[in-house]
Length: 450
Ligand code: TRP
Image (tube, rainbow, N blue to C red; front, top):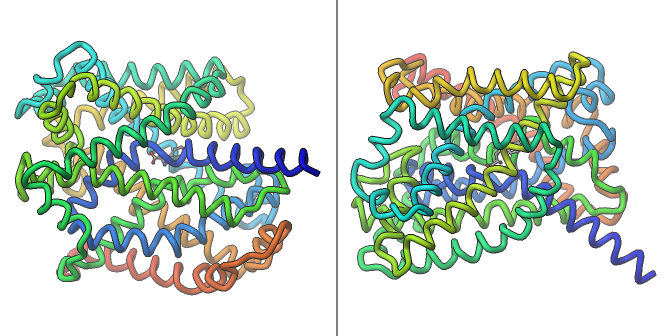
């Protein structure tokens, strides 16, 4: 009896840690803080939290449920439940292909900062214009992008993910502890209180459909939703592990780290750049944190350690992204693992180059007014993922019916938030996603002045 209990516990912990390892990455540490800063601070945080406990919870349950029920990854899973929905599997599989290249561009920036701090040049990194000069240059960011992508590809090629995951399980708690320390330090500096207020107190006048779209895209991105990845994780989940409580834990983990990253960065923006600094976008973390480290005792070492930890969190995510693409292509084209890895690597280099150059020499080339990196980010998080999530809701809510998932969740214990799940998947989520998508399309086309 005793033994059985322990093994099912470790099964659950193993599952939660693996899923959280994929979920926690640059999305939490790099992307969440700059979006929160840009979209009104507290109001973004509040919107995000509301969406996390409704949309995030429901979709995570649905995806993990689909995976565990069918025992298959994305393409096969939808086909098994209903042949007509095969296309959704392929559509979702496109998302990681778009995300991986630009994820590696940002991963390259992290690598560059890590090396800068570890070689004792942290003070230079804190100087004004350092980041701009770095990304403005053509070859340097490309070099770091190639190094980062190369590491990711080697791990996938050699199949040594397990080793990296083990290291990362040790590093994750250290990352959390260090982030708490940095956040507390930043919040204790003079001038930080304005930033803390901005981040934690919602200002409802700043609320618009854009807040919801940004928060929704971030939610999907951060929890690795609407791209089939959680279906794959679900397919590896043991039948005796409780889906509902695992999902709660993954959510708390992922959201907790995002909130913490905001506390580490946003008050510091108010100290070092003033309120004007909040619109910095993707550069926010790279511009702000070196200044925090510079003002700290032993900041160079702490900064170096911080970027090492972030690099590992990012690597577990990019490895999982690449692994997903490789296995989809292997199924599709029946090619060997090595050949497929090389093909995915080449594709990622081709797609990653414009994202890297778009911050510098190619800054004048824009698509719908966006640089390449922002465009790839927008098309995946704000268009494709909401569409995939919408189709998933219709599929579960009306085609195979919520009971398909509910039965799977109830295989071990009661489904406590069953009603929330049904109402969200059938009504709230689809209606909200349709409204948000329509409003965005109309405002992009210029029909509405929002
Ligand atoms: N959730 C990851 C992060 O926050 C990024 C990500 C998106 C991801 N989709 C994924 C990671 C698929 C692994 C697999 O950084």
